[in-house]
Image (cartoon, rainbow, N blue to C red):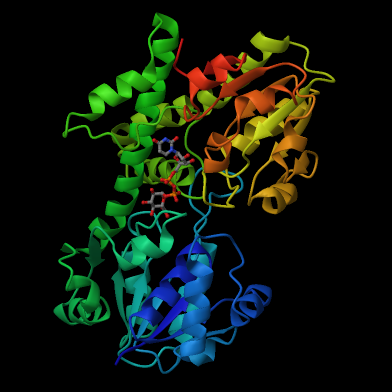
Length: 434
Ligand code: UGA
């Protein structure tokens, strides 16, 4: 049986390590962050991801899964998955490849001759070819493959163990065979297997995320038109979604996309297209990005239209801080961005989130946080529903009416039951619904 290493213990790395262990492989997870490794060794996942902690504990006790900060422990592994982050550069829109470069260097140093290095991180096209030629000089027996990951936060375990496709960028039949051996139990379930060259494998990932971002911004552009023309974007989305060529998923209009992937991936893709002399081809992504950011501004404009342009001293209840439900990830969270902007305008903002309060506090310590919905709503001049956690759909609008100072709500995710809120006496606004 192959022995695997997984380098990088974020959402992708921890999930991949635990999932591969559950398929029967011995797996060593490696990270330079000793705090994270200590948590993982004791069975705790350093972030919230449904079902992952249960899987982690089970796999740790099986004895197949280990975590360490010591890279030399990957020296007896046959396959190394590199799962480190590629955040947006601090001073630009391109991807920061510091962690990818460092991870490949460390792995190459300890990897045994003939082993396979597999990039899973999302990288600008051309990165793999560059790493491949560096390896050819420094460690000629090591081989490189690229195997992009399509897991969604909130469904990470499910998406890893039941992917809708597996894409491998390889330059030899041998590398493809090794990866088929790794994924053989998934392939038994007829998961489509796509062999590609290295640049195509890298591009598949950013193309997929760009398409998803485009779909969301498309429907948000339609929301703007609906508002201008007096239409209802939720009905429009439902109607166009029945066309199987369009499909109904990712047509949820609202405050747009955030998180650690879609926003930075479309920006890094634009930056890379410029380097390739093909910037015109991705010019539209600039518009996708601005439609996305405009949705956040639209909420702030609606707040001002509802309670007055001067927000000083107004209490704003914000339901949701995470970039999406079932996650505690607040990276580029539209909800938190809106909360912070309203706070900066002088309002007194109280943010509720069932899971993301602590990560949100680290990013925006200036905001007030609560884990009690009632405390968040109490005496509010307006309520903003910004992350569609299920618990917010379970709020009784009649009870909530008794808590707030003024019964006004903006549904930034088009997820609440408008009729029920209106019937309970609320002034209800939503993006794209006149
Ligand atoms: C995204 C992709 O969906 C994954 O396939 C990919 O593997 C991952 O990025 C990645 O690159 O690692 P994720 O960031 O977990 O996954 O989040 P999504 O479920 O794609 O949602 C992104 C954002 O779009 C969220 O803020 C969500 O609220 C928003 N969204 C989604 C909408 O505003 N409307 C929709 O209809 C759908």
